[in-house]
Length: 311
Image (cartoon, rainbow, N blue to C red):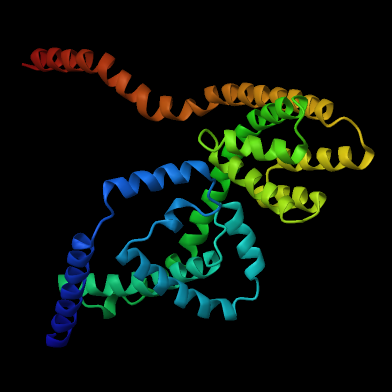
């Protein structure tokens, strides 16, 4: 018991020191922060802001996760599949895989450890709850994967919603005389505020082409990174147009019309499903409350009348 109290006291003091250091860490002057914000507006970041933000505690935690994750990468046989999933979620950093694996391992070890500490503080015997520790370790291993899948799904939906606007802007740029490479770069710059996800992908595609990668490979990589069906259709259309030498502007306009039609059909489908989705809230939440409000006073009146008749 004395050893446990000593360990907990040591951990508490350590976290307090880290918290004080983090709170008293020198902050950048407002002028510097404003200049950094203006600089960020001129470029599209290929790494999310959460990965670029550097503070003393965050930098220490990042190094810890990376060191743990790199050791786990050597035992992982499918790093490319994981890297593809992270890219579809918007994480392009070199250490994205190491950070992800580090988070998994830290949670797998930290959750059982935190549970053990809580039981010790509450005076509950740990031996009787040993079966919970492996479950918490499994939760720590699989929850990051579920969160990553959710992020991929939400990002796909955002790209799907913004694709029609991007193609419309691309049509305007091509018809104005820009090449397809310049049009992609221009669309990425215009959409970086309204639709940052698709702007990020288009910017990366333009940078790959500028770096010397064949245009067809860059287009295919764009469709593979996003995983959106309509984006893959756009990529296939651009590749076919380039091979056969047909008009890119006309092909893009036809594709934009089809995208608008699909978006309208999806909106109509979602509106048609609304009635069915409202059945369960109506039956289980709204109707019981209405019945209580409507029938409650009458039932009380009936019970009072029956009670008076018995007397």
